[in-house]
Amino acid sequence: MIAYVREVPDAINECELTYLEREPIDVAEARRHHAEYVELLVRLGVEVRFLPATHDLPDSVFVEDTAVVFPEVAVITRPGAESRQPEVDSSASALSRHRSCVQIEAPHTIDGGDVTVVGKRVFVGLSTRSTADGVEAMRSILEPLGYSVDGVEVNGVLHLKSAATAISDDAVLLNPDYVDPAVFDGLTVVKVDPTEPDGANVVLVGDQLIHGAEYPKTTERLRAVGYTVHTVPSSEIAKAEGAVTCCSLLVTT
Ligand code: CIR
Image (tube, rainbow, N blue to C red; front, side, top):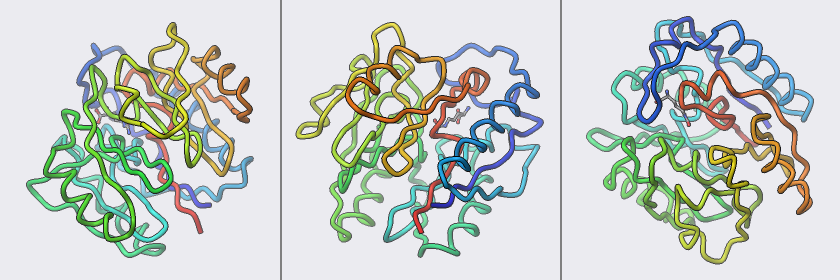
C-alpha cells in the first residue's frame, strides 16, 4: 500500500472552519503529530510518498479531500470550498501513475472526506461541501463498476467521515448523533463512546486501524471487539476540523 501525504503548511492557521471557532494551531506541534502519523504508516508497512508542499494553501495537509481511490479508478474531486480547489491537481498527477482518473466536473462538488467506502457500498455525506449532483456524478462513475452509491444526511459535522468510517469490509464505527445508523443497514455498527463524540474517524490499513489518541474509550471499544488499533495524537489538526483519515490518500498496489 502507498500513502500520499503532504506536510502541514505554514498557512494552516488560515484554514477553512465550518462548525468550530478558530483556535490557534501550534504549527510545530501539528508537524510533530504529522510525523508520528507518517512513522506509524511506515511501521504498518505502508510506503509513504509526499506530495509537493503547498505552504500557501492552508488546508493542503488534508489530502483525503482531493480524491477517492478505488481498486478500479481514482475519482478526483472538486472540493466544496473554493480555497481548496487548487489542491487537486497535484493529487491527480500522483494518482494517475496508479489508476485511471475521473474528474468531478463543475458545478458539482465532492470532498473526499464525505466518502465512506465499506466494501462495495459507497456512502457520500450531503454536507456543506458535497452536493446531491456530486453524489449523482459519483454514482455514474461507480455503479458501472459494481458499487452502490448513497447520499447520506450528516448533522452538525463537516464531513461524513467525521461521523462514520469503515473498520472492515462490512463494519463501520459511527456516532449516532451525527449520522443515522439505519443508513448502514446490513453492516455491523460499532458506536463511539458517548463522551467522545468526535471519535468516529479511523484509518483502515489492511485489517488494522489508526485512531486519534484523544478517544481512548472508543479505542477500547474497538479493541474489545477484536480490532488492532494504533493511536496517534490528532489534537492540533482537530482544531482545523481535520482528523486522521484526512491526512492520507491510500492506494493499494
Ligand atoms: C476544511 O474545512 O476543509 C479543513 N479545515 C478540514 C478538512 C478535513 N478533511 C477531512 O475531514 N477529510
